[in-house]
Amino acid sequence: MFNISSTAMKILITGYSGFIGSYLLKRLNQTEHKLVMVDLTNGTDIFDWQQVKHFEGFDVIIHLANLSFVLASYEQPKRFYETNYLSTLNMLELCRLNQAKMIYFSSYMYGHPQYQPIDENHPIQAYNPYSQTKVICESLCEGYNRDFKVPITIFRQFNIYGKGQNPDFLIPSIIQQARNGKIVIKDDRPKRDYIHVEDIVGAIVTAVESDSNATTMKKYLEPSLTIHDLAAKMKMPAHQLSKVINKEFRCNFFEFINKYRIEDFKQRAFSTDY
Ligand SMILES: NC(=O)c1ccc[n+]([C@@H]2O[C@H](COP(=O)([O-])OP(=O)(O)OC[C@H]3O[C@@H](n4cnc5c(N)ncnc54)[C@H](O)[C@@H]3O)[C@@H](O)[C@H]2O)c1
Image 1 (cartoon, rainbow, N blue to C red):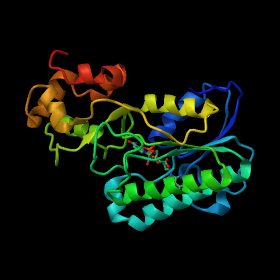
Image 2: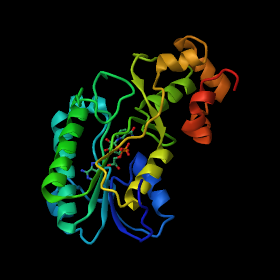
Image 3: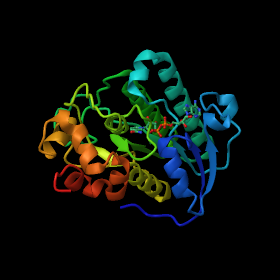
């Protein structure tokens, strides 16, 4: 059980202009906490120690600024390794110097699962350059926790969705294709849990305000869904997905999922009765 702190804190947020960061900012702006925001978009490269070493006096760092698109990590592995490793190292070092807590955004890192549902005890297995960077960054976090007692919370969320997501990700890409009248899905077998970005943001705020030094948090959502599952739940072949999205959601899938959120998503989004 977390103890929730009511004291206003000073929070450093990296990657605040990104998908999750923009939702987080909206939520934290409704609290008493003081925010310090850094992102490439406001001219700070947290990869560069000289640009961040002067930040001080904060209680928590929420570190979102990593590179994350898997396909790009195959094209530019060096950039991914350098950015994710050095930005995380710099933020951990700031936590050590400021006796602050670190909240790190990792990802799915279990490869092909050996059992389901997956829990934190499941063996870790990187399966692409991006997930390998996350394994390395988690290891850095563990080192700073073990050797310098930096309190760390790590999120290993799977697929996040919500309005404003980069169009290269699965759900926005399906919607975009539906708008263009035809959906082509390269592989409908990969299975993922889906969580709405506002639910993740709620979990981050809980972690920020808790006195817990928990090392890993994971949000469970059962069951996971494949694209094939999605189509099956709509009782039709995957290639007709576009038709269903057009008919049932009138091409407004984002509004639909934002309205019902994940609790109702499974029951309603994929039912032809809706
Ligand atoms: N979105 C998802 O589905 C998802 C799933 C699992 C994990 N994650 C992780 O969550 C975190 C945030 O994801 P997101 O979807 O909001 O990412 P995003 O790409 O939308 O945002 C990342 C932000 O970080 C900033 N940034 C990148 N490199 C920087 C640098 N060197 N210095 C300063 N700022 C820099 C970018 O400008 C951008 O605003 C990432 O660590 C990502 O790996 C995301």
